[in-house]
Length: 271
Image (tube, rainbow, N blue to C red; front, side):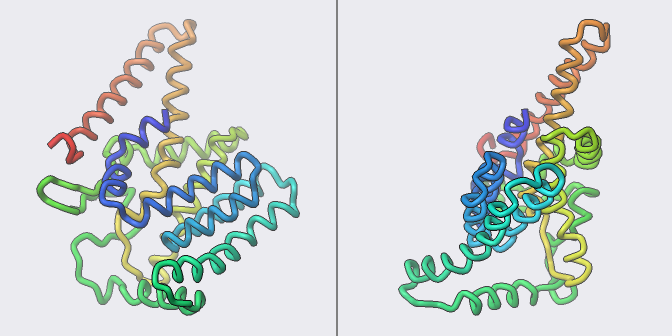
């Protein structure tokens, strides 16, 4: 269910369509999550490093993994610690290798990181005039649409069926996490790491941000929504629920149809 929602989510589709750096970063981030959950800690650490090499924000995968491990596993301490350390090590070692392949020059990775951080920190809300910038809290409180291209229309917006239920889905994930639900625990760790980080970062640094910074978090919200929809499907399968089971099933079907419809309306493919 979560995969279906994510596959037909507008912001995710548009980001991939225009090949933003975030897409490659998220691919390695998802890979690091998958490897971690399978117990392949060392490979997971390398994947986090690759995610950060695609875009520095890919490093946010690391606190998500660390938080989940502290909440649930706390096993294989030596190997897990090695994987955590391997993420920045692989980042620093692979950067000059990739730079050399691209530019045929040996560049100092520390200098490269300093350059990237200085460039991004120089763009703040106080010195930048741009209609599409927004604060992190605006992403979940107000629906936002940014235009990548007009004809065909590439509109970057969190699908409204996802956006409208961000806060309820987070509350539901917290509830599931308190019940030691594995999906709830991981998705809330994912949400905390990839989204909540931006709130203090925005306040402290005043660095500009955009709604597509929420893109790496969409998957976590889809898991929360998938859990909720699965609960309604379970109600349908429970015949003792009476007429409520029909309400549950119609709610699920209606929501999925609306989700697909919004995707069709926003997607440039159908226009």
